[in-house]
Amino acid sequence: MSWWPETEPIPEGVWGPVTSTLLWCERKYQWTKYMAEPVNTLTNLLFLSLSAYGMYRVSTERLAPRFYGCALGVGIVGFGSFLFHMTLKFEAQLLDELPMIWASSFMTWSMLDQTLFFGQKVNRFILPTIIVALVTWITVAYVTNGDPVFHQVAYASIMVVSILHAIYIMVHPRAPLNISDSSRRRRAEARYLEKTGTVLFLIGFGIWNLDNIFCGHLRAARDQIGYPLALLLEGHGWWHIFTGCGAYLLLLSCEIIAMTYMEHPDNFVVRYDWIPYVQRVRPYDPAHTLLREYQAQSQKKAH
Image 1 (cartoon, rainbow, N blue to C red):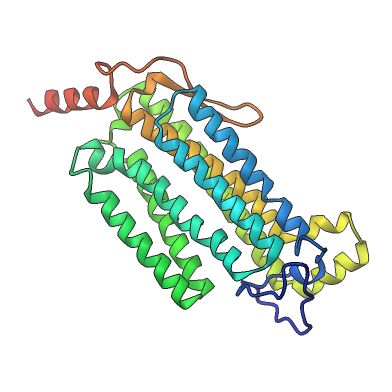
Image 2 (cartoon, rainbow, N blue to C red):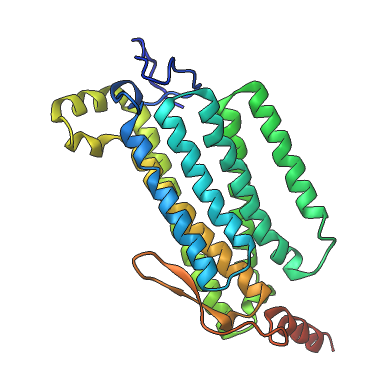
C-alpha cells in the first residue's frame, strides 16, 4: 500500500476503470494498451519459472507429493499477481493476495505435519482442520473488509509462525535434527536456505517501502533518466524479484526439513547450481529413518 497520495486521475486501458484498493509509486505512469504495469506484470514470470522448476525437481528427486502443491502455490501467486498488475482490477487483486495466504499456509502445514512435537504422531486431522478454518476466516474477512493492511498482517503472521517454528526445531538441542552428523548437515543447509530466503524477503520489502516513501523523487528521477534505465528504479518490480527468490529458498528449506523427518538425512543433499535444489542421493528405506534413530536414542537415554 503506497504512502504517496494520487492527485491525478489514473488512465483507463482496455480493462476499464481501476478498481484495486492498492496504490504504489509506479502504477500511474506505465499504462499501455494491454498491461497497466508492464514491468510489475512481467517480473511475475520469475514466480512462474521457479514454480515450474520446483515441480520438476519434486518429480526428478522423488520428493513427497505435498511439495508439488507447495511449488504450485508459488506459481499461482505469481499468476494472480500477473493478472492484477496487468488489469488493476479488484477481482484480480484477490487472485494475487488470497493465494499468498493459502500457499503460505499449505507450506506451513507441510512442515508442521512432520515436525510438530518433534515428529510425534497426533491425530492427522487436527492440524489441517485448524489451518483450513483459520485461512477460511482470513479469506472471508478480507473479502468482506477489503483492508490491505489486514491482509498484510495476516500474511506476515503466517510467515512468522512458520519461520519461528523452523528455527525452533533446528536449534533445540533435543530435536531429531541434532542426533547425528548427517542430520546436523541437513539442519545447517536448511538454516542457510531459510536465513537467505528471509533476508531476501526483507530486502524486497525494504525496497518497496523506500519506493513508497520517496515516490515523488523516484518518479522525477525516472522521468529524467528515461527508459529503459528507469526500470532499475521501480521498487515494486524489485519486490517481486526478491520475494520470488526468497519464496523459492524457503520452499527448499521446508523440503529438506520435512523430507529429513519423513525419511533420513542421508537420503538428501542441497545442490547449489544456478538454481539450487534438493537432490536425492539414496532411495527411501522404511527401516532406516530419522525418527527410528531418534526414538532408539531416546529410549536408550531413558534406560
